[in-house]
Amino acid sequence: MPHDHDHTEPPSDLELRVKALESLLLEKGLVNPDALNAIIETYEHKVGPKNGAHVVAKAWSDPDFKQALLTDATSAVADLGYMGRQGEHLTVVENIPSVHNLVVCTLCSCYPWTLLGLPPVWYKSAPYRARAVSEPRSVLAEFGTELPESTGIQVWDSTSEMRYLVLPMQPAGTEDWGEARLQALVSRNSMVGVELAKPASTLAQRDAES
Amino acid sequence: MKKFPGQPLEQDEPVFREPWEAQAFGLVIALHGQGAFSWDEWATALSESIRAAQEAGDPDTGETYYQHWLAALEKLTVSKGLSAPEEMAARKESWKQAYLATPHGQPIELKPAK
Image 1 (cartoon, rainbow over the protein chains, first blue to last red):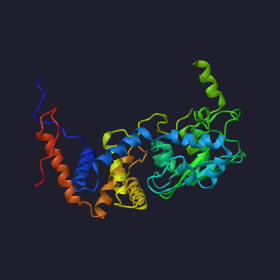
Image 2: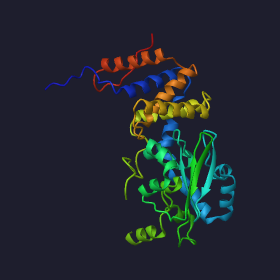
Image 3: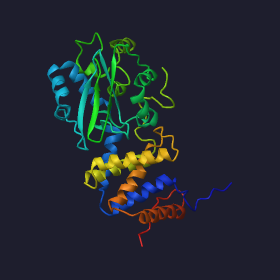
Image 4: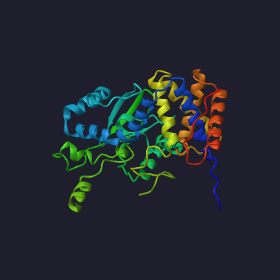
């Protein structure tokens, strides 16, 4: 059957809306095309949870840094080169045996982008935004995270000015590990607070397999 | 492990699902970087757009997040006087016509504005 080649099927309405906006803003000089491409490239490929894992592993292995981080996280991470583009402040909340921290943004999706990249789909969903506050323990259970009854859960609601990063508890048996090795135990989810850091055995197993 | 209801939990999920999401995202960061609006104004616009979508029946499971993002961007662009709804609608139509007028496989170019 002959295929009609004299036109191109227009993309979806959403795509057309973005193209319209983008072409108008570029034309008016309100957005610089190189800056736009650089931003997309950065968020697609360069920022991600590795930055946050670096911060957490350093806090585990360097008590002075940990103290600085808990006192003024914005400056402490800026010293490592991680600076928020939106001028937001960062607070690092430490998990301890009696308190587990969980981060949410109930209104939209404020998130420490510089340290964790862009938020996963579930973080942006209405069920998580509502239930993290109303029933945090059952949300944690759905991520496979069971906490002792004696551990309280503190929920932190992010805003455009204040973002939170959870400092998970350092897994047992990793006290003499170096920073690079520790980083592998720090998942994105553990820094949002829906999971714990991975146990030392995950790396031991990986070493045994390789 | 039980999944959070209806939500993918993959560690390596793509940051953007489709190119238009990346473009819409980048435009907001770029406009903010140029001082077109404060980040607080953006967060307010985005939460309003999410709330409006929920009220209109959107399940708001995170899949439609960039649709809310785009709606907030359009609204803020208008309220900041950077564009107007008519201008955006006309430009959208021009793009559509450009697609329809371009043979398959050729690059799509917008005709100079009238």
